[in-house]
Length: 173
Image 1 (cartoon, rainbow, N blue to C red):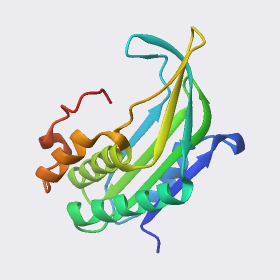
Image 2 (cartoon, rainbow, N blue to C red; image 1 turned 30 degrees about the vertical axis):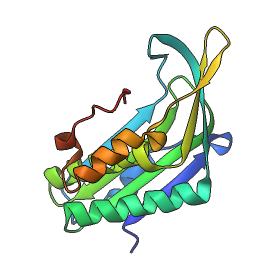
Image 3 (spheres, helix red, strand yellow; image 1 turned 90 degrees about the horizontal axis):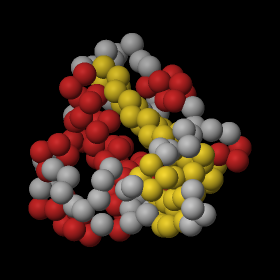
Image 4 (cartoon, one colour; image 1 turned 90 degrees about the vertical axis):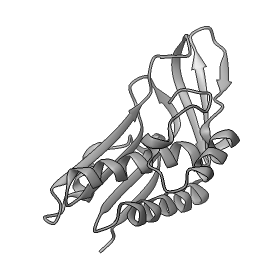
């Protein structure tokens, strides 16, 4: 039985479907299910956003997602099912960009696994994000995959939960 599902979804072929995440993690062994669904928002850093383009190196992203899932299982411990999927392509306001779902016997482990997974995706996955603005300009986001200060902080705080390590690395999530 597969316990970790990972995907890169080209939205030209269809959107991310959060219901698929819930279906994957549903298991009679588990009473706790936590989800994170990231959507494209209309404002960022004081600018009006009209859309986002995500570009991913699919094979490396999938490998990174799998490693994240394995690390979550080790850190949280016990049985778990985890779903990680990220969109690629041109997304509009309100489109789903990322879906993470974790199921475990109890809520605490599910919340911790879900939080660990989404933070790791944001900080480690080879995902490039270009925001498009109402004034016609576009800008590449300084995404976490390039954030060396945070990577060093994570290494120093190895073993601490993301909520304990803090989020003082220079950009909002």
